Image (cartoon, rainbow, N blue to C red):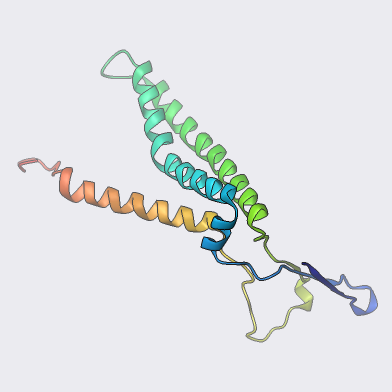
Length: 167
């Protein structure tokens, strides 16, 4: 159910457009009510882990398979330097599309509000107007998990690379 209000501005200024969605239900209710949403949510979680783990490790492995000596030329490094960011960008675009599919499946489309800068109040009534998406929550969780895993590995398993240390 949409409510669209368009307030006409005086003397030819661009009008303010506000589109409000119905109040979204909770994430758990949306996933239970729409099994396809649960699948999309799972795909986003797996995709975000692939973004931080599989893509970098995969390109390092591919570059290591190309090299036939212990002292490679600049080519494998260049491959990693270019391929990892491009692959991460493409995976990010795919995750963004999955987030849009999830929003359509659950009816959680974002509120759209257009207001020209000269119509904004100079008082302290500033609102961000941004509602966090499911993709943002999934990405925050996956980055947090990656950082915690790296910290655990670094302090527990990596050992010291300093000369004279036992590592």
